[in-house]
Length: 199
Image (cartoon, rainbow, N blue to C red; front, side, top):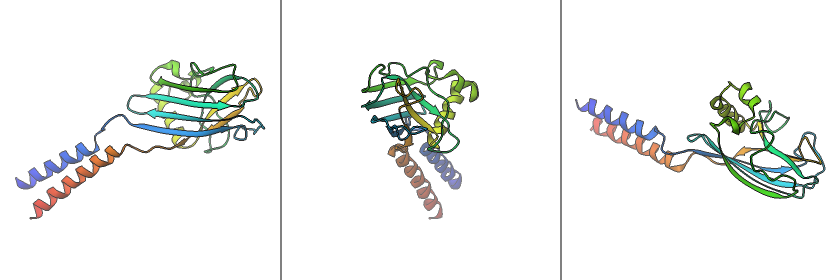
């Protein structure tokens, strides 16, 4: 009976420790330049982009800034997924022709928008169709591409219709510390229960 109670407590502690704690954000960032385009160009334009994926709420926050472009902005989006991390080209994964509200007709600007990735309007229909046919399967494909280093942020302009500045997105954030804290608490409870059983 005592052993049964100990095992039950240990199982409950482990289940509690590994249960989702809260929404999980993963952030990917990159610098943007003409040198990172394929093929590279001599644009003096620079910029940065941050993409935060919430794999609990299925949202994507896109933040970007750019300046000194040769041409004026015509479109911006995320391309995915290249065969090799950090090189090559791929089709557009996100909304076409451009992110909703992204600055256009300018050479410098800032952007901050959060998208509901369960909505088909957040995607390029071709990307959905090529990756399982649903927004859920497209979300998984994009997240996998981001984690593998095969997705890039591209800003297209009148001077460079195929893309004036771009950068491959790389992960910068890890799971929340509270997730690890709960896991350690659960493991500690299991260890305590096992020690009591031996005593």
